[in-house]
Image (cartoon, rainbow, N blue to C red; front, side, top):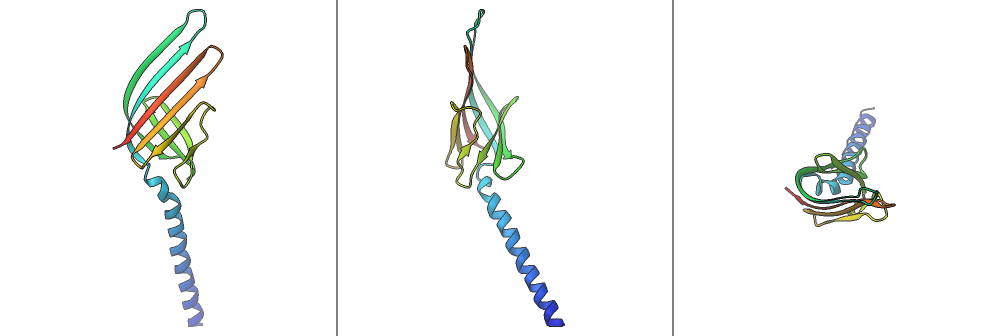
Length: 134
């Protein structure tokens, strides 16, 4: 009886160690990118309706990158009222951008380049984002 209890205890301990290690390894690739970042965003807006509108501005903002609702998503807050949720794989490759004209990537662990574009039919909004990890 003592041997059975001892064996079950050892199996339980080993299972706990491996399950904790697996969770840590799965989220480890995110750790390189999470935290405080300084973002420089060049924002361009164009509307060619009857009045017309053009805006071009550059904003520097201390934002952050944090985990999304699950381990495959990150939330990038790059301006006070602007953030984007993207998918990230274990190689740091970003996907699920808002349009086919958008893209971006991490350059090492400390730099991020994003190009986000929305619109059509006479108008668009572009955010060109450079981020440096703090």
